[in-house]
Image (cartoon, rainbow, N blue to C red; front, side):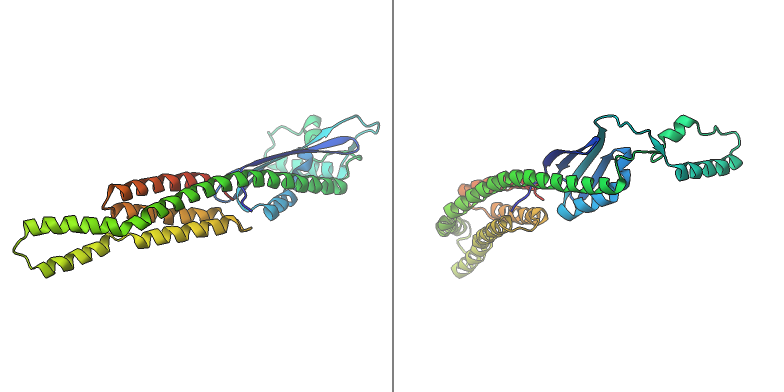
Amino acid sequence: MTFSMTGFAALEHPLENATLVLELRAVNSRYLDVHFKLDDALRAFEPAIRELIAANLSRGKIECKVNLMQRKQTNLAPQLDEPLMQQLAAMQTKALAFFPQSRQLSVADILRWPGVVLNDDLSQTSLIVDVKKLVQLGLQDLSASRAREGEKLKALILDRLAQIETLVAKVKPLLPALNKEYQAKLENKLQETLKTIDQDRIAQELVLFAQRIDVDEELSRLTAHVSEVKRILNSDAPAGKRLDFLMQELNREANTLGSKSVSVLTTQVSMELKVLIEQMREQIQNVE
């Protein structure tokens, strides 16, 4: 299946006295690039969330936003983490020994310090389980979104491939006649210009030139590359980088076809091929 690197997912997960809110956004990128916007109470879970994302996605710039929103007030008085406050006091004492003119921590500073105010209703052990479950569901929704977008990209690419095959099928049967016609024109011009030259030598040069302008090999490689693109689109492995390489190869063959062209028809076909290849290349930049 072909996956796009663009997608979006948004989910909520209710807790006893709060709600977890998740947003996942994905855009195209050469590598997997994950950025987090986490609630202060959830920052410790970043490594676990990153591991989940890396296990499910291989490319793309991912923005993961997780918020913890309190839904109602609890009747229990807030608790303070006394060991953490002791550590803060010890650190402040050491710091003031080096910087005696510095301002001491206020009560407001201490209460705002992450982890100082405890919430008995939200156990860290159960919270990480809920967060991981929510992220996993969000990744499933994101993958479904990327799959839908990927199918649209696949359909567009297959349409361009069909047009390329039509162009190749149109020009390939005409090549022998076109080359023969051009060879006859060239022979006439040479005979008019070089009437004293050996006719056998002219015939040999014409055969060599005909070989240089023969594009049958380029058309065969174009057909082979088209078949390989179709095979990759139907595989389950990430396809973006391989498809990008094949677009370069297709463009190379189209350029060679244009440089060897001896007729207006093959020149037009070369230009149309390059337009179609460029359209595919632009879309493939968004394929995972």
